[in-house]
Length: 451
Image 1 (tube, rainbow, N blue to C red):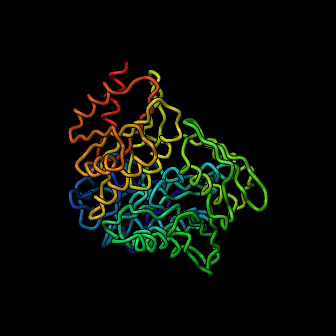
Image 2: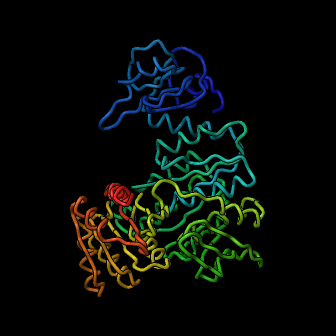
Image 3: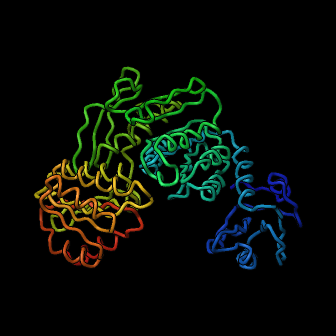
């Protein structure tokens, strides 16, 4: 982070400064101190950062930002609301740099798209990106503080649960290009309808200058309806021939996906080191951002080959002749279907889907789980292991649609034991569920048994 004086920070957030000095970082978690940094005491339902001001002093903070009086020898910036002040300070800091910031959002695959987009941007510019899933109104501003004097571009992921959240994030980050990867049903419990989800995603425009590129998925039934003469709307896709940027000649196996990208009358070969048609969309999105921001199309297409899956996002593991697809970081109906599509492409003796509950779907939960069960049956999955209370609907619908071998569990230990005894050489196994279902525990149990 570029060094800031406490006086300019206080002015930026409309606070009152007691003391003087400067700082070279910003943090909000006292367990992860930044020596010489500004500790901002956030307040939540179950914590109060003001309780850790003493820790900040002990750990070498340069100053603290507080809402209420605190006992410390450090300089203090007093503000009315520390969370709003964090956003205001991040907005001020972003304004110190004349660099292209890419803002991206979507119902599914944001992180994968972010990683690929960062690779494309890094092929031309010194690029920073959102780390992990720090994409909310605390994580995103902290990401902006990672911009250095040497930084030439930033790729910023924006998450949301409610209306107005992306409006806040885009106002702070002020993207020069916006990307909406898709509109599904994630967070429909809070937003009520897909139309409302679309409107919430389009809030990204509120922080963008007129005529900036808005890059969206032209195959998505909601996004393909978007029209806005104030922005350079660019559609990417596979099926929709009206898209300015399209993928053709697609080939996929369990290791990779290969396609040609059509752009401005030319073809650019793209090798994506991960299986699945949905990853073609992620690569198209990243390519589209790159070329709209001046990166050579050939270079943009090749950059995607450097992608490495993070954590439990569609990681392929081979053990004892079995192919495992670990894709249990999160789940929605769209991403579950994408996982099933990937499993379908794998040449295996049996294709086994382990599908856990999809959370945060509210009244839509039964419909969504039944839809995924039907989809698994239609795609010719050989065996379904459903896990969780809501996944009983997945199992029931799969059986109704003639998937003959279906098992349902509500106990993780029972599922682990049955699955470890069931799988054999030549099988391919997909694990897919919301993060809260902790499918990784079942995966680790099976791996340990196979040693």
